[in-house]
Structure formats: C-alpha cells, structure tokens
Length: 52
Length: 271
Image (cartoon, rainbow over all chains, first blue to last red; front, side, top):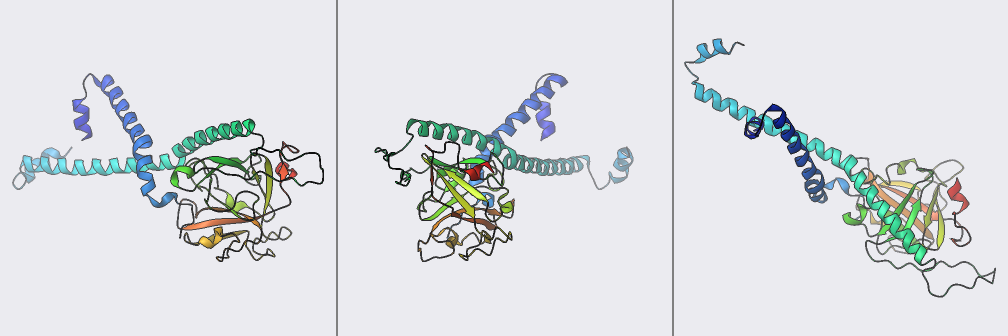
C-alpha cells in the first residue's frame, strides 16, 4: 500500500518526500479534527456524569 | 541474501507467482496493522493534548463572554437592593440560564492558586467539552439543595484531574454575576479525615456511575429533602477510565459575599 502510494507520487525523490509529508499531515489533521471528534461521543471513555 | 539459494531449492513446490502473492498479502496485512496502530496512537494524542487545546480555547471564549455579560449587567435583577440599610442582608439575584450558557466561575485554590473554570448549564458532551457543567435541575450556587457540577478528569483541559487531592475544609469558591459563595469540603479539617463530617456525608467518595443519590438535594438521601446548601463535584475514576465516579461534597460556609463590597473575592480565595 505504502509502496504503491510512493510509486504513484509524481516527481523526484525530494519532491515525493515532500508530497508524502503533506499527505501524512493532511490525514492526521483530518483524523484529529474531524474523525476523532465525531467518533469520540460513541466511546465510553469520556463519561463523567452520574446517570441512573 | 540467501534468496537465490532458496529460490533454487524451493522452486519445485513454490512457483514465483505464488510466492509473490503470499509476500504481497503478508505485506498488506502488516501495513494495515501498522496503520491501525498509528491511528490508535494518534487518538491518544487527540484525547490527551488536542482536546486540551480545544477546551482551553472554549474556556477563553466563555470567560470573555461571561465577563462581558457581568460587566454589562453588574446586577442581573432590575431593582437594585437598597444599599442604605446596613442591616439588610445581601441577597444575590436569582440565576436563570439556558442550557449551554455560562453562568458561574468555580475557583478551587487547592488545585491551583489561580484555578478558575467557567461553569456552563448542562452536562451533555457538548457542554462538558467546554468546561465543567451544572446538572440541570439541581440547585444554583448558594441555594439550599445541591449545586452539582460534572467535569472531565483527563482531557478537555482536565478540569477535575486532581480532585482526589482535596482535603476537608478546602474552599471551593463559586463566583456568580453579583456574588461569591464559599463552600468547604466536608470532613474533619482537624484530623484530615474526609469521612467524619457531623452530617454523615463524606467529603469524598467513589461510587458506581449510576448512583444518583450523590447529586440529590441532600447528598446520599434519595428522598429529596433539602437540609442545607451543598456543592457536589463529579468526575470519572480512576484516571483514564470511566468505571467509577469520584465525588466531592462540600457545604456552603457562611453568607454569600456581594461582589460590590468584595470585588476581589472572599478571604478564602487568597489562601
């Protein structure tokens, strides 16, 4: 999978490395600010209230 | 390194195509598992740090909002109580807030000299993501009954991370639009025993998540009888878990202090 992505990135090694870094940052940001906030309420870790 | 040798010896049972397929499959599974691991690690980063940043931003906004509201309306009520009669006791204006709105600031000197968090109305995830939330329907600050507040232990600014450090007699100061209320953690301040309060209510307890009696008007008494003005803080326990709840009970200590006469807060806040 990772080699496949690397092969499909255009440009030379330096350019590919930059593109890969941008991809990693973009995916991390997507996870941190969109996916996790959405998933989190469905997980039980964050309950602090008393509910009957 | 020894691939060439192995190629020659195993050529009989393993064609190059089959080996390539197996290798691709193994690599695919391995990379998928590594990806899952990285995502899980990133989730930990999110829970422990990113939510802190988001909550700090929300708290900052809430602080500005509440200070602005309080500055606009120094006393929320229309008729200002006559300041002439020195005998007339200070009566704080009743508080009426909508769900999600900030209405008080809680100061806990034991946690930090400058510890202050804006309390919002409501305890759903949305409210608690911004800061401690007030259980709707429980008493308002200073009122007889139980002013019950929930807050996160770890993550989202960790407002209640160190609640287990509370000692009997520790002040919990609640600031509203026009008043200061000093609550003190129950227990015997002389011996430091949290369980020997004359009222029989412990200053700190650990209960199952379903024990609603801790936020009833008199903590521990499900009948709903109002006996005094209590404050209850709830958070999760142990840290990083949601298995139990850590509960702090405190009782109102003395009369409310008008912000007009004490803009900097009660002596309990200074130390």
